[in-house]
Length: 128
Figure 1 (cartoon, rainbow, N blue to C red):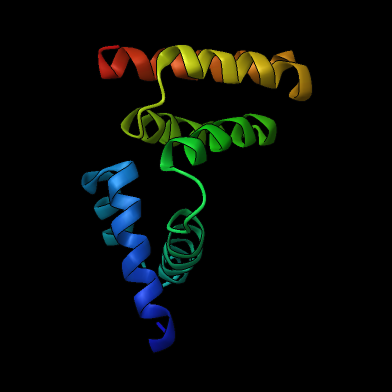
Figure 2: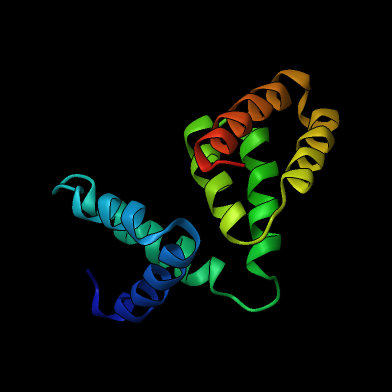
């Protein structure tokens, strides 16, 4: 990794763990191989260190935006991960429901229905 990116990476790693949990992040970073390690470094430094760690929006708001964007992009794997992060960041079950209903208008009912299905699975796993 470029030495100039190390502080951004470290800041991003801290925020990423706060949102997604140590176990998930440690697994993602430690299971990276020669091929995927540069992507882990990039996502951690730029996505988490340069974006999530910025002032101006609370983590809860960023999580809410992620849920809407991941619904729009139809990214179920990432949605599942960020649902857990949203719950960690204080987004309530009711707020998640409203995000997905709102997304149905702009992203389509099938996208929202998939997000509701995934959220129900995550709620069950989390005992909510």
